[in-house]
Structures are given as C-alpha cells and as structure tokens.
Amino acid sequence: MQQLSLFDANESLSFPEDLLEYFPGFLAPQQGISLMHQLIKEVPWRQQIIQMFGKEVITPRLTAWFGDSNKSYQFSGTRFDPVPWTLALYNLKEKIQKVTGLPFNSVLLNFYRDGNDSVAWHSDNEKELGINPHIASVSIGQARQFEFRHKTDHSRKYGLSLENGSLLIMKGDLQHNWEHRIPKSKKLNNERINLTFRSII
Ligand SMILES: O=C(O)CCC(=O)C(=O)O
Ligand SMILES: [Fe+2]
Image (cartoon, rainbow, N blue to C red; front, top):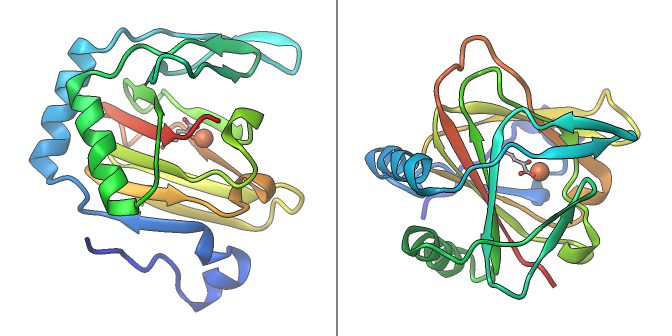
C-alpha cells in the first residue's frame, strides 16, 4: 500500500508528522463512489442534537454508529448504541485491520450532504477510546479539506485534502494536543461520507 509523504520541511516544524499516516489509494476511485451510494441508501442516518457549551445544537451533517453490540459510546452528551455491522462495513473494517495490523470494534459514519455540512473543531479524546487512540478514517466521495490546529497555540496549523478512497490514520498523542475540523466549503459542494473506525475499550 502506497503511503504518501504529507509534509515539506517547513510544515514538519509546526506539525509532528509521526501523528498521521495517509494512504491515498486505499480504495479504487470507483469502489469509493459506489460504496458511498450504497451507504447513502442503506444506513439509518440521523441528525443528532448535541450539547455544546451548555446549548443544544443540531449537528450540521448526518451520522450513524455501527459496531460490536457490547460497545456504546458517549459523544458531546449523547449516548450512541451501535447498529450491528453490515457486510460492507464489516469487510471494510477487515481490510483496514489487514493494512494497519490494528483492531477496531466500531465505526462512526458522517454524511456531508453538501459543502454546507461540516464538523466543528474537536478532538476525539473520549475516555472510551483509551489514552493514545488509533483512529482509521476512510473518506469517499467529494474531497474535503481536513484541518488541524494546536490546542494551545492556534497559529500552529496543518491541513490536507482527504481524497475519495483515502485512508488516514491518526495516532500517538494527536488527540491530546491537536483539534481537527472539516470546514464548510462553497466549492467542494458534492456528497461525501467519512468513516472513522475506532477501538472502544
Ligand atoms: O469527516 C471527517 O473527515 C472527520 C470526522 C471526524 O473528525 C469525526 O467523526 O470525529
Ligand atoms: Fe474527529
């Protein structure tokens, strides 16, 4: 599997490159697009209402949560009980486990219907994920910009385009020191699904 070098000399000064691994051709382009259309149809998508700074906010995207039946997950004040694995998602999990050598027992799906859907700055630091979690993020459909900023020094930033069919591994102490987001975009306006495979303890 080809891994792409993400950083030039300047960037690696402000962002530690050992916290990410990027595999652009993890899925063939056509495989990515047909999986996206299958998931748009077969997944029980929901628009969650979450607590943010004490207020109720409607998430600007659709989500779903699949995984082993004994693993539930808290996110921004909401408890998610997983839907059992579909064949397509189980097979994708197996393929990721083969490439990475890491175990995963759940996946959070995000459906960005157009460029107006987004995810705000956050880190995936829920205690159910353990201390330094590995998160495997598969992107299909419209490529979107994925941005990082350092938690205490917002001038330290990094961004990359998550292409159709790509796999990004987030690891090490990334979630302690960095936040990430998918900003809204006027130009990148087509449908996209992102799947983050996680290991809930
Ligand atoms: O859509 C993405 O690429 C990122 C989603 C994300 O950060 C999350 O689900 O925690
Ligand atoms: Fe995240």
